[in-house]
Amino acid sequence: TTVSATTFIVEELIIPTSRDAPEFADFSEMTDVRNEIEADIVGSSALSVTAEELLSGYLQQDYERRKLFVARVDRKIAGRGVLEWSTGEDTNISWITGEVLREHRNRGIGGALFDRLEAIARESGRTILQVDTMHSSAEGGERVHPPTGFGDVPAGDPGVRFLRKRGYTLEQIARASFLDLPVDPARLDQFRQEAQIAAGDDYAVVTWVGPTPPEWRTDRAYIKNRMSVDEPAAGLEVDEETWDEARVIKYDADGIASGREMLTAAILHVPSGHLVGVNELSVAKDRTRPVGQEDTIVISEHRGHRLGMLLKVANLQELARFSQESPIVFTFNAEENRHMLDVNEAVGFRAVGYDGAWKKTIS
Image 1 (cartoon, rainbow, N blue to C red):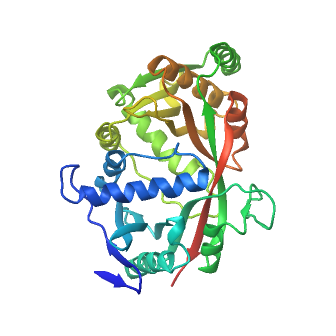
Image 2 (image 1 turned 90 degrees about the vertical axis):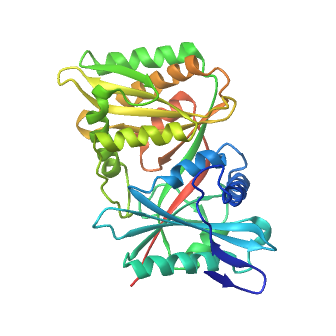
């Protein structure tokens, strides 16, 4: 179906089954638009992805469903909208993404995209709408603060103005940070030694490249499940995720399908023989592109032993061995997660932008 207006149309974009499918050209154009919008906000193309990398996630609909829409002006894609929801039986949450190129804003395109996505969510019976979106890091002027009391965003930011007007409230801010590579190896060695001394003999580092080794899949599933509920979520609604060995195997396979390589550092609790923390670094096929930091977590019962620092530094050392060409690592952390921000700042991460998490309840 198509929604018409005087200067644009909004239509669902068919997700291609592969890069050889006829729909891949449109998907690739949509990816370019996504990258341009985010680079415009952050002032860097570090968060850009290839169409192949993005497609890998869209093809995996077993645990999360996605619908993709685009807005066209003169047949060219000017904006995009994404609706995501969990396949779990009890979910009441829809996640919405809506982005419009700067030159096409203030023409009703963003509103039309959100109208379509919100209507689908309403028809499904899911009454909690949540949005995760990048905002500019401009200083000065009126600020909008989340209830957490940590961080703020400019009231004049186009995304902030748009979401407030549609009745969304800011619940949380995550900091986007970059670490310039290489990091001085002597510094990493020192941090690792200090962290290992603080951790003691009860904890050891385990690393691997690529899929999770069979002996660690059960522990990895448990940690992924804990990650879904242990991360700071502020006032956001969160679905607890159900992970088992089969889902870990699928997660690893999806990563391989994207063309990226995953470097994993984990913490082994020696007395129990179980993993209790993990850090992931996602490396593109083109090693000169930025590295994405994915999961970083130490399960709560084992916090307070500097294991977060131990994990992060150990995996940065693995990265230095794996790829000398990588220019930066980027990561996102909730502004109230002071412990992890302290670790990041000590290692050398710097703030480059802010991601706002917004929420609205509909009937």
